[in-house]
Amino acid sequence: MTTPLTRAAGGSAPGSPRSIASDRRAPHTQPSPRSGGGGGGGSDARAWGDDVPRRLTLSPGGASPTASSHRRPGSASTSRNPSVYGEPAWLDGNDEPYISAQQQPYSSAQGDRGHPQRRASVSLQQSQKRLAELERSEFDLKMRLHFLEERLRSTLNGEETLDLHYQNIDLNHQVEELKQELKQARNTGAQATRDNEQLRVKNDRLSKELAAQKSDREAAQAAAEERLSQQVAALESRLRKEQADHEVTRLTCEEVVQGMRDELQRSTEAGRHSDDFADRTRVLMSTGERREHTLEAMTMNVLALKAELQQTATQLTHKDLEMQRLRQMEQEAAMLKQELGARSTQVTSLQNEVRRLKREQRRGAEATAAALRQLHEVQSKAEAVTVMGAEEVCRQSAALSNAQRQLQEKEREYQQMKAELESTGADVAEARGELRRSKEASRQGEEGRMVHLAARATEEREAMAAELAQPQRYIFASCHVPG
Image (cartoon, rainbow, N blue to C red):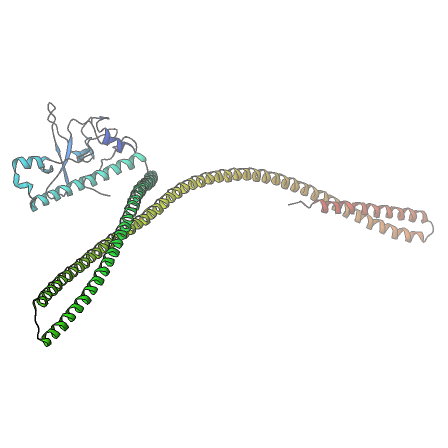
């Protein structure tokens, strides 16, 4: 990767891979001031304790970083060009990229004191300016990350070591993530347990309240129904009595009126009128009026009883509504019980998940240990097999060399015996020739004894040839070498 700022040749980054994290904690713990003007091969490439701290400021175009030196109070007026030393301008001991006074974020306290209108909203120009500042900071961080990776790569001496380091970091990150997930699962299980306990307590309290309210309402309803039934029975009996009295009075009045009419008719027919009859008529009329007033009063009583019955029916309707609300509360209690059961199931599942994660972690550790043991066993067996194989090869090589030497010796003996056999065959042929000659000589009668001696010599030579043939078979049998 080629960047506008590259590290000069010969500079070596000090420290280990952990120095990147230690730089943030203690940026000025290893001062190594430079000596000379060219950045020699043995000098530190970062110069943490430099007398001239350098901070990166970017041009408005953002094309390339430039180094601006800030002189400390009381120090010499010297300045360095960071590109000469091959280092980024912001590596002056501070991990944070420098942000100038113009790039500092807007302070709400200062704005509230000096400019009250800024509290309303942020203008588009300020937003663009803030965006440009964030882009510059991002570029600074990317450049810093690049040079830190270069320093880490030069420190670790090789891409493979750096890859292993990154892989180790990734594995540690995965382990931390698994720990966080396990912790979160435990926290979720604990929270679910607490919620379950709260719901259970609330459900118990509501159940007790509902049971008490239900018993009170049932008792009140039973008492009200009993009282209303008694009142209705009394009113019905009173109504029946009034109706009977009214019927008796009506019949009596009708009889009296009919009698008076008959008497009036008879009196009219007879043409007699007397004061007694008028008095009786007035008495009867007053009695009829009293009966009518009584009938009206009884009618009003009946209407009042009907109104009371309607009021009783209204009260019963209200009681029914209260019973419906009570049933709704019972349904809500049942729903709360169901929710409590669901939460209990969720808590159980979370507990099972935590146990499963623990079992998987334990199985993973056991599998790793078993794999390590198996690897050690395989290595030990391989070493033992290698040693045994080497010993067996050496032993077989020695046996093969010994068999080859024996074969060579047997071959030499065979050649010698073969030569002796050939010479013996020549001797036998010569003896046979002598035998023929001796037979020819025996014709003369004088050489009989010589023939006998020649025959004996021939037999001896044949026996010697047979004895020589037996060692030849032994040589061929002993030349076989086992594998």
